[in-house]
Structures are given as C-alpha cells and as structure tokens.
Amino acid sequence: MEKIKLPVTGSGYYEIRLESIGGLGANLCGKMLGELGVKYLDLNSASFSSYGSEKTGTPVKGFIRYCDKEKEIRVHSPVTEPNLLVIFHQALLKDGGVWAGCNENTEAIIAIEEGQETDALNVPDPIKACHVVKAQKIAMETHSRINVVMLGAMARVMGFAALEDVNQICADALGKKYPDALKGNLEGIKRGYEEVKRIEGKDSQAVSLKQAPKWGYETAPIGGINPQFGNTVATDLSPSRQGYIPLFIKERCINCGMCDSTCPDMVFQFAPGLYKGKEMMVNQGLDYYHCKGCLRCVEVCPVNALVRGVESEHPGKGYFLPNKDLLHMPDYIKAGPDGYVTSESYLTEKRMEGGEV
Image 1 (cartoon, rainbow, N blue to C red):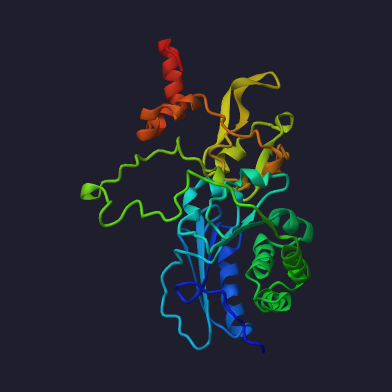
Image 2: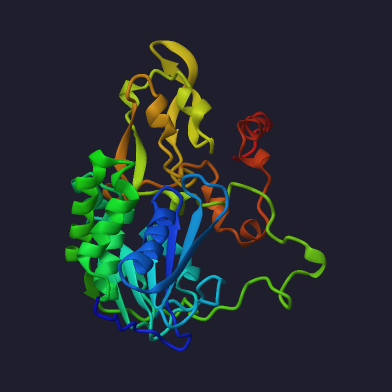
C-alpha cells in the first residue's frame, strides 16, 4: 500500500468534526471513519461522539483524528480546530457556534436542501474552502441515509481516501446487518462523492471563529446561577428538524385529538368552532416554530389529515402563536413568561375580563 501523505497542521493530526442532530447517523458515520483509517488507509485513528439523550433532534457531535503509523494519538479531547468540518443539516447554521475554531486550514462540507441558495449559507472567512452537497435529495433518490452520502462527500474532499475503501468500510459496517439496503447505501456514497461541489466563501461579521466558552472558570455566573429562565415559548425547535414537517389537511380532519395527545411539544392549536353542525374544539393546525419534525402525529392520524412534507418546499411555515409579537420584546427575550401566559386558561381569563389578548 502506498503511504498516504496526510495534510496535517500544527497539531500533527488530521482532525474532523461532525456537527449534526440525532437521527441523521453522524455517530455511525464517525465510527466508520475511525475504522476506515485503521483498516484501509494504514493510519492510526481515534473517533468518539458527544451527545445528550439519544433521540431524534438533539445535538450530536463527532470527532475523528488521523495520524501516521509512526506517531501515537495522545490527544483524546474534542476537536476544536478541525481540518474538516462537516455540517449534516443546514438548520445548524442558525447557531454560529458550529464554526467555532475554524481557520485558514479548515475545509467545510454542508448538507443543503434542494433549491437552497448557497449565497445564504453565511460561510465565514477565513476558511480554506467550503463545499456543499444535496444530501437529503440524494438519500431519498438512492433509498439510503444522509450519513453515507456525507461519507462519500468527505472522501472526495479529504483527498486521501479512495472511493473503493469507503465502499468497503460501508459494507463491513452495514452489509451484514442491513444486506437489502447495501446497494442503495453504496449508490448514496457514490453520488455524494461525485456531486459534492466547492463554493466561494462569504464574509460574516456575525461569527467569531475562535470563540471562548460562554461559561468557564472566569465567565461562569457568580454562585452558579442560571440566567436562562425556564420557558418553552421562546425555544425555537426548528433547527432540530431533519428536513421533514407534518402538513395539515384541514378538510380531512375529524378533530379526534390524536395528534395533540401524541405530540411531545404541544404544537397543535385548538379553538371553539363547529364541526358537522356541533360545537366543539376544532383543530386549527400546528405551530411550526415549536415543531421539531418527529412526525409522530403523521403516524398516529387515522384519516391522513397529517402527511409528511419536505420542509424546503414550504418555507412559509412558521409561527402559529396568538402572542408571537411578544417574542420580539427585549424584556420578554431576557426572561420570558411561564407557560401559563400562553395557555388557554390565561386567554379565556383575559376575554372574561374584557381585556386585550
């Protein structure tokens, strides 16, 4: 095997950081990258992931290090200044922290959706290069997963991993467990490898590439007090979505309330109204600001009044809150009300008092 020349920087390692959300397969992708280095690239490698609760929509990070066989990997901390930054979903770009530690030696790969303008990606300078791939579109067309599409794109951008080796590590990891899906996964890798493309970076004044931790030894609040008041009203769950949203077809709805009872984030809005001549609480639809796209409502709806849709095809879906204007008030953003302020009990009480809602 011909010796690979790693494009290492000051650390002496080639380092990769994966930025993802639960459900997109970044954890498995990181494991495959680690095994790829040892089994097929004749490198030393280490990989691990960082995540909280293992559920769809929660933040996931993956860290991978490569070095030559002659050197040991003696660092086991998270990757702070990556040679390759891989962003599995463009919604993560709402958080400028995904770019933390990037510099002139960093290449980035971003999974974008069909029709998304690359000019709107807010790519910061200085980074070495930025690449994009329509990972969700490819995954849907090949009946594969986003993680294998991104694996193919990474192989192309890294430049030292052959497509045949990446195919083999995929077969090793997934072939025996999911033999029927192997053909689609290999096609997804191939498409990701061939269709990733480079774009020009854009200046971004809003992003600090070398960010200090918000809370540390010198910056932690006195006494350990948490200044972020507990409320869900100002919590935007849209970055947790994996590219799909539930679409509400009102004329099919029988107002059974199954969607409301299964929704973990209580996004469905009911109001007094008429259904087949009877007065009852009628489903008005859902608030996409607080919807993380788990699609449990789609699965439970008995009449297909909720169906799966591709988020990028419905860019206007957003707020559905009676008091959404409060979210733009400085005092509200600073503290926020408790959940009672947005409850039906509060709104009914205000109506009875003759006050404005």
